[in-house]
Length: 278
Length: 341
Image 1 (cartoon, each protein chain N blue to C red):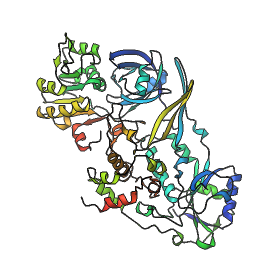
Image 2 (image 1 turned 90 degrees about the horizontal axis):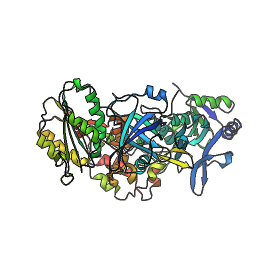
Image 3 (image 1 turned 30 degrees about the horizontal axis):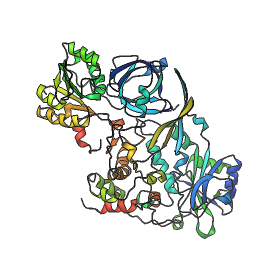
Image 4 (image 1 turned 60 degrees about the vertical axis):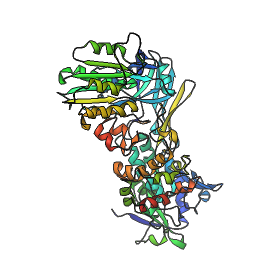
């Protein structure tokens, strides 16, 4: 029996967390127990979140697959659907379809150092991998997180940043753009690529995962190259506008590569094969 | 498999139509009105347009409507009831008078709608559609089926294909699929046994204008070509080419709500429209028209053959006929073939 592939799971908003101006995190639980029991995903995958009557919007699953029984998403209010989502209260029902797309190959990364570099609202797609790795901490060597935002206010997951800061098995460096600091700011001041250069993490036996606005990514890659990172050891996730999530609606392709099916996770080596259409 | 061939006498075709009608089949056939020929529910054989090259719209609407529900919902404060579109509602229909290029397009749509995940709404519409094709006895300068793997008497995609045998007015019927056999079964007397008939001499002449394999290979190294800018200078991004295309399947998903209940609908979209790939942030990966025109050609002649093993063009020529600024895909494909890199 075929199924309607556009049918979302019904999800109840269990908890709403205010992260930063215009940015919220929803903890979502499956309304139907069977749905929850049959649901599996891996770090890096995404879904279509919907407010019935308004529409669907694409973003990653921001929680780790090691945390069972719920998923989380973090979004910024920018368009029609994200504004409607932001207006939803705890207890409301929203839709979720997924998981779609490929995954970060955490199994292949066993025994390696992990370097996470994120900017602004791009920490959520990485948070999934970070917690996934931290929940399987023994599988990896050093874990370094470099995270920057425009201002102190714009940093998301402030409580988790504090947790990571305290952990002895995580090295966290936070930074804000020049002028974005508050009087009591103790982190770095400077753009992410500059801070990466300053911190100069070793590329030896290390995988770099980079997520951020295009301009941050553009200037971070050359820094990583200078530090000796091979293109195959640098990962990122692409975002393109999507409607279906499974290769039919026709808008997310970059050349012959479909972000929804072949991505969203790509290595820099793969990106270099793609035309400049993302 | 050899295809069962039968003769249907000139006057018997109308009888077939009547028999199908008596069997409670809903028949969509080409009807002309105000200079346009389109597939409409047709009650009488006499209202069917017989002397046409191409309908204005392709027959894809029957399997991929311009707007269709994918689910219905009712919402209240903390509860929500959502139901998938009931595929049992999809009616059995007969598409009468489909040109071979449109019938062939069904295979290309099927490749898209079944790429890994199966689209049950599309599949149920296709499975409930019987396609009665009619070979082309005339063509115009926009037609180029023979350059893209088709021909005016191509059986691909039709369940039965009729070819008019010249001045006699009799018809050769090729019974191609089980659905075609089922039609013959309810109208046995109409489909008479025949010696092998050659239909080719009765078909329209459509000269081969280019070689699609050559174009495909050219496109591999053509992404950065200035030719895209040149070709698309006059494109206004209206999307008409996609809407009339028998293989364009790009769609949008939107919600409609009235009071507490509503539907999620899928509707036709086009890669030619500037908002198609626009991010909420304002960033647009295909920011200018030349990138969008490139996408259209590359998708049909490079990406689809590579990813789905089918080309996305059947040479119906509708995009050239419908274009308000006279862009002609045939001219552009020929110039891609001829350009030296």
